[in-house]
Image 1 (cartoon, rainbow, N blue to C red):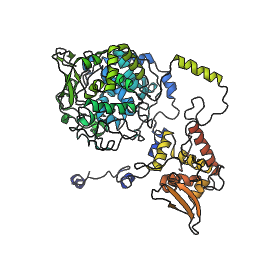
Image 2: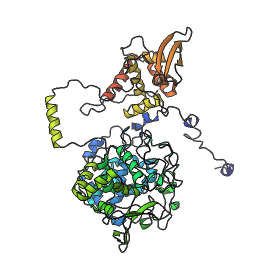
Image 3: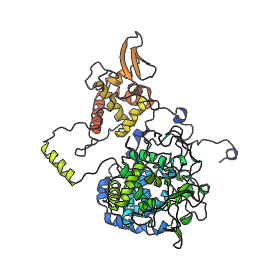
Length: 622
């Protein structure tokens, strides 16, 4: 570096490829198509021919499980195991991989191994999980591509539970890894860790430091009744579920129950399942808040090169073991933190609880008793009084949760059964389980239904048929791209599909918006030809800029009407470039072929009994 550059006090943007002021800096609200270009063969080091299902089927599954079970008690000096057992850490890792799922758009969850990438690898709620994944590396290295990170993270959680005497239903593999961060997920609009001032009106600005869930002192801003912005599930930016201290750091168990019910409901869980999961998860391990969080360094994405993917460097004493700082809370729930038991409910109702502070300053609760029955994680000569989180007390002080908790207290077998049944679909969460009687009844119906010679479309009866309009937050064309991503469409596939549906006259309401053809019902490239016709001038017909009228530039005669979802293919530079391909004089055959391929792909997305259509192949000129 030149001396003048090194001494210049003005921050300089990187003057290399990808650096400098970018398009998104100039036009932050412009429509982005990047989510339609994710997870392609270009970013996959295994190549398009790699068959993960076949690779997984060749895996020595029992050997992997044995190695994982051995790891549970193989404590490493660089990151010692609490109570000599990594079970609690690995259950947390697995659940935090799966727990980002939400029902509104089906995004999140553990299906891609996204915990390896930003932002999830650097969320405050995932502190120390960088260590958990690094503990797994020797096993991943040993078995290579026969097991993906996505499967390994979740399988490890299962094995952890089994190693602590809980019997699971088993494990279903098959989650192929991706190799880049998923930019399609809306995690919220906040710009500060633990903030929730966008997802809630009157929310909290968030915490100013990394490495702890300790928030600014909260107060009741309607936290008993507040509504969480859709499609979000988490109560704060950077949390998987809810704030364990209570809403915005306010230690109110009843208000916390409102957040819990919302968040777990958005993961498709009812009250009974929610109680079972919280109690079951908190039957193991401990939280970590040995000291003040101002001793914690940057998260993995902000850490130095030499940290090699580790974040949250802890400058408090040894920085590990008994000096670990993760959430800022210091709670061990039961006297048997490495064994399955019903002690969580026993302690919850046996003791009265008083508010206290962790060594890091977080709100938590301690039993009003002289009983010191909780083991220390690293010193066998020490015992502690029982402790709980604000969200644990919600299981007692919310009227509906209390009924379920008392039933589980009196009927441990029901608790175990509910925890097991809800635990099994956590990685997918979006489907109910069926039993033997369901299978028999379903088989009978299928056998009596007769043959089905035609495989009709399943997935998009209303998609792209000029259905919907802008909201105060999202433009119609942004919804269009969002839905295209959910249907796994590329930008060329989206373009071909919309153009074909318009000329086929398939608008959901029978309107002529976007039907830019004189021969509706006939598959042609007329939509693009007429959209790009410079003899047509467009203008909005209302103040909301949702509907537009196209008129002859010279005569003013009305020609067409269209919506934002139509005109975006002429206004957006990248989409217009694709429209120009399909609007060319020699493009009609290509357009028909590409439309049919895209139609078939979407129609068969949920058909596991038919061969998937290959992705549309675009030339290097696109």
